[in-house]
Length: 272
Image 1 (cartoon, helix red, strand yellow):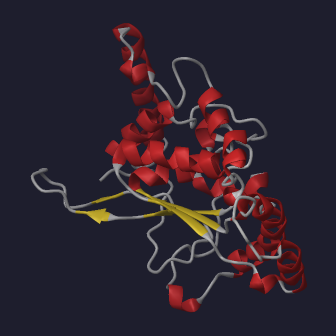
Image 2 (spheres, one colour):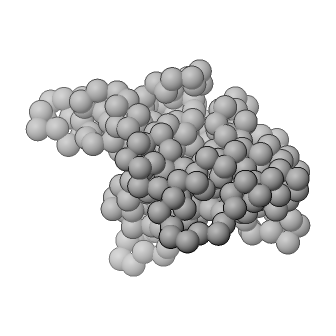
């Protein structure tokens, strides 16, 4: 998919973009449907509840501007934040039966936004770039060497690990030969990709594996039909001490419709 032509950087004071406004119009009815399913489960164990779900849903359908704007924010914190984020997605997802039984499965379907920073950006980006797969699906993609629970680079088979990492560098070299800038973030992207789905074929996605970018998310059904929350991965500037010739790092992976102030936009995963 071609990169979007519209300006990706603008101040929040200008309000929502027309693209995001249009998306919200699609999203609100889906949120109402999700609330209609989830709220009875959520209040089932609430004693003496006087909340009338039927009247509330009817009010939302009569005026969709009343739909609550709720989001899930996943914090940074490296691998721990990454795994916690995937776990939170599973806990709130109505496609995971234990979560439904606990009364919280369905929150994910009722969210408007999901955001993440740094380590929390991996599940946010991974969920969106997999067309909103379940955590169990993310665990199952690929094989024993490549999935969320392992990486060939960590294999006790040193020959295999060397071959895999060598192939990464060949791909990065091909990127440079094509005229694109490369950096250590390219290596980091392959490390993450080997563990978190990005090197897998996702059912329903026809974008070539090595050609996928964040811009492709807008064409996936989960996003284009507003079936799931709008993903926002945030950027954080860090100036690390003691690293020669380095002034700053950014962790960046932002959607093309984002309305954040002074947004820094790129199609790579940085490190910091």
